[in-house]
Image (cartoon, rainbow, N blue to C red; front, side, top):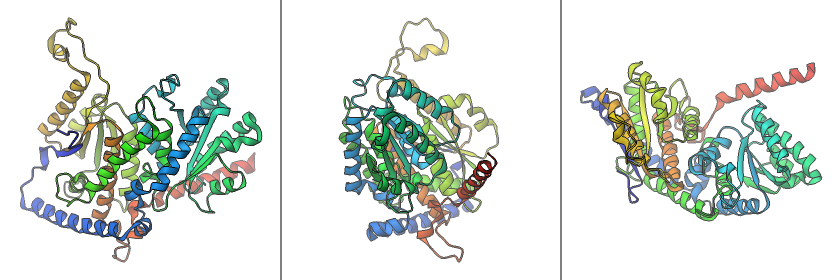
Length: 478
């Protein structure tokens, strides 16, 4: 079991993966040799320093060491908390999902409904800019207007290029409403998190009319790896409940978890604490040897966004050159009543990765003497977290008893330290899996870490181009 001294434990169910035949053992031996070589490459890369990491699009591995970015983010967060009541993050993909995941996992689920004093200075937070569907943006603007909050709303536009269509469309609508509410000072209600380069539209806008604040999307940090940068840290600090921990302490605790993930990543690949290498090994064996096609990512808690974040992280990074597992996100035990039957009784092309949290936070006890008979009386007198653990263990045991391959990442507590440790471990596992798939090998068969497909997303550009073309036709016909 994970403890304060052992915050993350990786384990595998037996099931069909307890293989002993010579072919499987030979595959695993080759796989272990590859992992050692990958570990040597990544270790050498770390020793080469930040500039090499930037070129390889892996500067996210040392984001916890970028003291200026962290200090600037905290300073801006404190200024925002002093002046505003509402924070709106405008972004899509990695510019949005990292912040959403941190909020969904760690903030009070009714954060926005709490009184300001109950939130301990944490601002109300809303997310937009991830769709052209106007439904939620219309409702958000109506909400802010009717509560007279537009003038006290800070809008954070997150886009590295500053050219993302969905994001900029929402940002310009918000700007128009801010202009109506505050006149020429609208820019003092806006911050931007973007690339510090002339090609960024947001960078150019800030030069013309300075925003309330500007933060970088750092070089060498792709969107789906950016939660640890100002992209995710700003909303994380802005919503901090000072009754629990100050923004400064919140960042320190979470970054310590990320640092622990970094330490573990540099351990030998067969070290029990190096969960990233062990997980990547398991995933690669599942796909390449057992010919599995899907990974069920089951967070055994009532937090849904981390599965969406993992879906983007894995799919955009690993599904290249016709390979890569499909991600099916779910949460337990809710997902057991929608997916479990198909997982066990459907086609055996799936493996399951569980996240299991030992301490879920504030708890409740199920009453005794309820009069409920039969098997349900077993729940009486137990903490809800205890029954949640019983449910996770029962699901894991049932899957393995039925020959389904499972693995689990078990965490001591649902808090910033452990969540950042977990997310770093998953990002490392994806990076290792990309190397196992030879995504850093170019068309000539040579290593080219600067063009590693794990950090690219060329498939996204087609829809963007066609969307702009269709929009131009619509403008011409109006």
